[in-house]
Length: 273
Figure 1: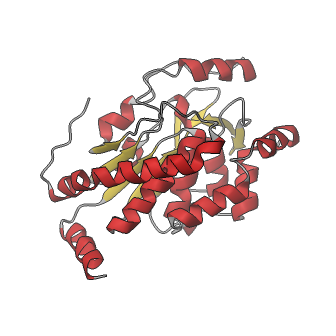
Figure 2 (figure 1 turned 90 degrees about the vertical axis):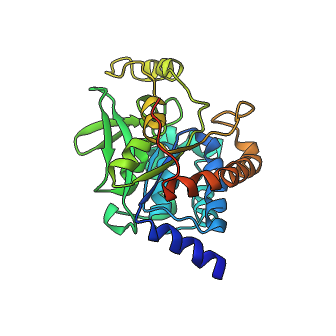
Figure 3 (figure 1 turned 180 degrees about the vertical axis):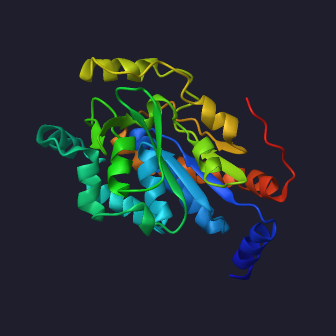
């Protein structure tokens, strides 16, 4: 306990706020849970968090005060990791926000313990949307609405789809919440083009305003420490490999702990690419 207290004291003494940007990647979001478990063990907590897609679900629940294992229980309880549940969701038209709501009940941004941002994209204007207030479940659902698995989400008179079309690792959103040092977790392998996902979007929504872009640029440009494990053996639908990916996230985060501490102490200068 004394060691844990000392770690927390040192970070607070630096006066720097630590932010976390959680990337999108479907089932690969299990990596986020493993990383959060590692951070818990090291006494590293975050003052702000932003998420895209599955990163928004994990991030929103973390901002609510849940531990890695508690978040895992909510995700499993929602059924978004189950193919049959996803299919039934499509047939019923309930969407990912409906599944999340079943597991969590109604939640608002005002219920959160730390600042949080969920990143989505307006289906028709193509503009990035960063939600920081309002209906938390609806906004997490909008951020996670990736075709063909989930339909677009209607919210406040606009239609939104997955934030990964424009910003797959929203470290910039975490920095805009007031973070001085930002840690990112990339599940996409530094994806430099949204072309493949755009094809699926066009098939489901032929009329849309979203253009092909580099969805990783903002994340890599705004982070101080990027955790980017090799996930080439897995896909967004690798639902049978959740335990393996949890462990990958855990050890990848452990390896970056010295780098994170150095960034907090001011010994590392942020480099944009």
